[in-house]
Image (cartoon, rainbow, N blue to C red; front, side):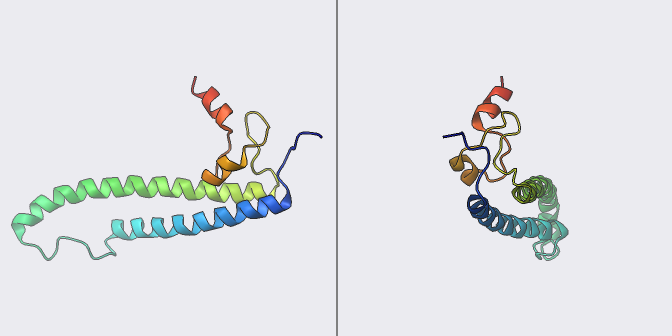
Length: 126
């Protein structure tokens, strides 16, 4: 039997469902991070005394920097999931961009936006 070169339409639909669920959750997380950055969550220092306000502003700056990094990382994750949906449409989803072989189902279930097999990923680190 010839080696499989792409996932079946049924398998691609299963991956689409997994990705859509993760995309939904990722978008909600991103929206929460964004609300936190814009102060829309109501968690600021306006109602505290001046002494605490000075201390909190320093911590708040660090917190905002970390939240910004998390939001950027979350957006990158969302873009990776959206790109995976495009690959599903093109029927190229699950094909390693280095080796041209299918990425194992287990890896795609764990990392649905993966574009490299473990083998290719490890070779790139050397």
